[in-house]
Image (cartoon, rainbow, N blue to C red; front, side):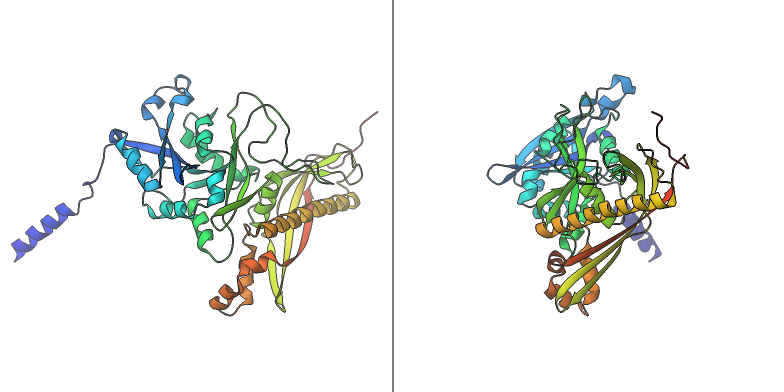
Length: 412
């Protein structure tokens, strides 16, 4: 019996080894990015951006950026068939486990990407951490024109861009898992970063002009006024979804406001009109003092939302020379910031209510108004958000004044 048991254990050990499906590195090709566009006859155009390891050997100066990756496209009905075609046209086995970004063309995003996301989340090679990006125009053009200046490897470029999304908060970071979770939850709406291709002609075509008491225009991807020989692709703004369909976009400043409501607003520069010299401006380094306080109520069926924000700032520039470091003047500046930020929050909520989406997830706070989950589902808390009255309170505290303790006017 012992001998028989030893033989059985030995055979079981041989069958349990994990090398049966192993492949050598030179037998695999790695996909860095996948682009999906709408094609004719309700088909998809799927573009794969492949890493070319052989072209990445040598020093950085000897490797051409355009040779470090290889885009290839297929017209097909779904991602599974695209994978089959992809596999049958290459000598190496495609591996999708290192995909950094899923790029979606605006046209198919507006038609709906629910089926696409279901495939992404179910297929084991795709990770839930894949970054989501909706681009103006086509994903194929975006991938083909992406020529990073400082990063030879496009994979490193995508990874770095999404890691530094919080540096300016002009675009957001959203992965496939978060998108799919919001798609299936009864509250909150999906959103992604917004990308585009710039013409690099320095043409100033903002999506929205500056408002009173503000000094900065608002842009989205593809419209930032810049020129030169830099990489023409850019990330700016947010794509908003209602269900699985894209319904609108947020500009750079609106995206900053969204990050504030999400409690993810970093330390960023805000340009505010000078309260006492309207022709001048004051530059303030702002950050959140705490996460937003959001309260919801239902009074006789009428929903209300109360939002309280605390901001802290450091003065970085006062061109007018007015002594805003002094308590009396600092109060004027703080109130100016309060008005600007309160109006931004009110405008963002009004826009999302008009689009009937809730990217900030404020509707989730209505859950406490119901006793059971069934009651919440019947009430449709997203509908409550869309018709709710909103009251916004912003309190700004200027904590620091930079390297100067007192400003003074210029000598004439």
